[in-house]
Length: 107
Image (cartoon, rainbow, N blue to C red; front, side, top):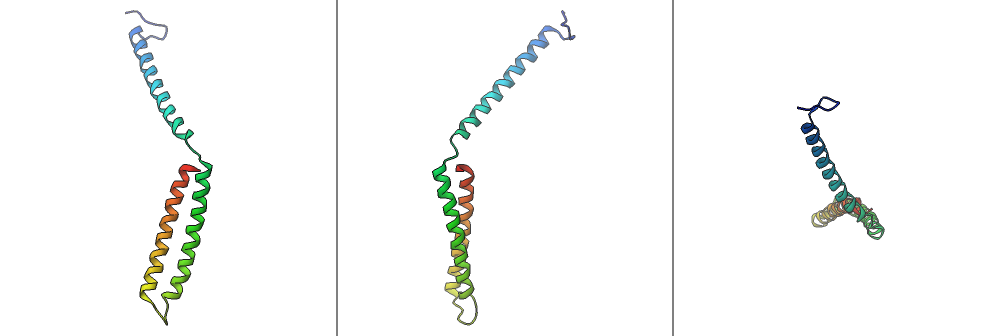
């Protein structure tokens, strides 16, 4: 068998080149997909909406905490109002989390 300057046979050299070409093609195809996905974002209009909704959810949760402090304390404990305030507060925290997750995509 003929040997190249580095001591490899031509068949092995050709196989390595072919493998490198396939790997390069796969990397380029993967980076093209990533570039296409990244080009869709950011969206300034949606980002502004998500930031404003996050601020609103935080303020609403603070309001619900203040209401719960009044409704869940003695004297005048109102169990239904207390539960409603706490549930509303948790809803606002979950809404805030959702808004932050969405904002990571559109901002």
